[in-house]
Image (cartoon, rainbow, N blue to C red; front, side):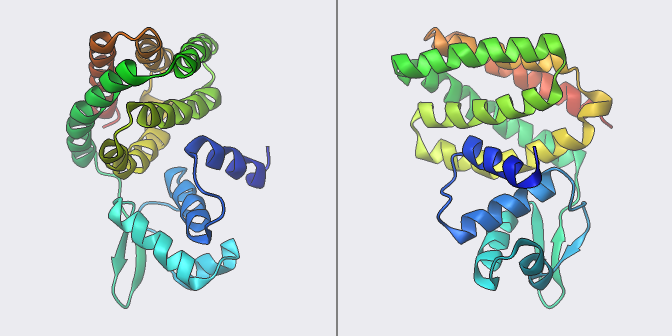
Length: 226
């Protein structure tokens, strides 16, 4: 899969509006930051991003403002834009918030999912189990994006969705930097599958408990990466 195809798949998983140049700029820059093509501490300029992406100054500027709001870049007046550093202590703080928000999201998704959505979660659980058994990190990363997008959509709470949007880029970047050295992929994928299965079966309380077990592991992973 080439870069253009990869970006197309990424956009589809994220469910973003392809018609907006700002969205296109945001998606491309966010992906470069999350996958460490733009390294922590690296300085960026609007001009260099315009040249690389072939997108005008206003969409680039608006995309950078969104990324600054999400904590992935810092805008330095008269100096440019800096990719933020990865910080373990802040990642643990982020997980404290994710625990509470995701517990609510998973519980509500289990309660509110339509029959068609439950079938999607059941397939997702099976696919996650298969990724766990195969140790397929690329497949898992794509399924994780699908899982995140589907749970946020199915919980049907726009404020929860906005809160998760603020956290997901930072979380994925941390994961991408450290998963090769510290992640138990089989365990992580299996824990995701347990949440998806509980939602598929409409078991709201079990979905919340499974979510807590997943965050417990992510906290363990974060400490192990030190």
